[in-house]
Amino acid sequence: MTKKINLFENLKSDFSSGLVVFLVALPLCLGIALASGAPLFSGIISGIVGGIIVGFLSKSHISVTGPAAGLTAIVLTAITDLGAFDIFLTAVLLAGLIQLALGFLKAGSISNYFPTNVIEGMLAGIGAIILLKQIPKALGSDVTVGSGLQIFSDIAASFGDAKMGVIIVTLISLGIILAWNKIPVLNSIKLLPAALIAVTAGVVINEFIFKGTSYEITSKYLVSLPVPSTLEEFKAILLTPNFSAISDSKVWIVAITIAVVASIETLLCIEAADRMDAHKRYTDTNVELKAQGIGNVISALLGGLPMTSVVVRTSANNNAGAKSKMATIIHGILLLISVLTIPIVLNKIPFATLAAILLLIGYKLAKPSVFKRFWQQGKYQFVPFIATFGAVIFTDLLKGVALGMTISIVIILKGNMKRAYSFRKEEYKEGDVIHIDLAQEVSFLNKAAIKSTLASIPENSQVVINATDSVYIAHDVLDIIKEFNNIKSKEDNINVQLVGFKEEYDLENSGENEKHVFVEHIKK
Image (cartoon, rainbow, N blue to C red; front, side, top):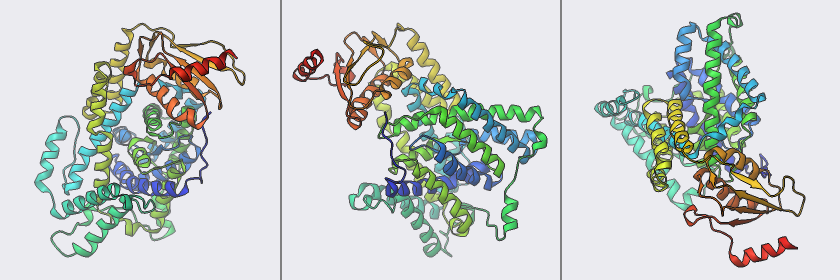
């Protein structure tokens, strides 16, 4: 039983986190809409619906939903092929209905079969992409970073038209964020997050110091939101699906494609979000698919882009200290308020400041310590990790994950696939001791069953996890056992005894005296 956190219990930290995510999400919503060949406001609509509607319906505590960079190529091609954005919205609505059906069919459990090294490789790859693609924006360059090996030549070219004013704002923003996070006195002021201070500083510098000089950052390098002055103008921004196209086979092909890709990306990101969560709370992925489906239906009806759970905003949310999904909802509310009340003010924010925020987010996802950790775990963990990392950067997210999964499966199929664990009894009454005896070979394919078993152990229980007969235990399974032993058992008052774990597993077996007392208790 996982402890529930009241939405208003941690409002102070959740508001701070929501504010940070809002600052990160705003340019991403606009940028993804621009890259998708869609109206800019459609990205904002998707972010608002993803934050408020999906945030409320989802069971995830820290994940954030919005328009996804991973769907831009599909959306751009679909809008071109279908010929009109309102026809494309019909496909998005149908995709949402398909996702809703997948949730009721319990297709969300597929996420449990992605090994940790593949998920971490995906996160590191996304982090590297974020970091690389923000370099031109941090320099004030007009170069757009492409894909594959072209990334490096594009970045080199971006130094050729760098603008000193943009570079200065980027460096000051980076300095503020780093100092704010390192200096305890500043870091303790949670209602003034570093990102907000950096954004404010960027606006002030450009408006009052650089104004009228050669360093001034022009509107081309500032946030650009539509500014409706009347209700009619605002209504004109909102588009609705063209239902007359619902019988078009091309619309259905696009709908199925979006539903499948968006669902897979969401499940991957939810798995990653659960790993980021300090409390190690598990998300019901079937409920998540339903929430995403409803979100895409509403987004389409309002003229928004398709959405998924997204790693960048989720990572920003987690790093900012989010405690519950209220942070996600708050970010959606702030997006709504900002575009209705202060679009002119928002349009003064330099992309350079936002690039600085994203550079640090990218670094945290792909920092060297992650690579070092998997290298130390051995080739069977490192090879799938680095293959996923490289393929995500030079191809795309789904191909990268597919490659990592293929390598992991080939490696594990060489082993002896035996039952992961066994119970001494099938049913337990209050006061019974729960015995979990691990098998000789425990792979990542057994992760779902073991995760489910440990998650269902009631409060105030007594559990013995015995690895005496185990020759191999996957790191994914060890991570789950560690999280259960270090976090869930303490939160739910579960007495855990670990027996027979090897020294290299980094799990401390119960002491002999403590074990003796426990055995005597069992005999009684």
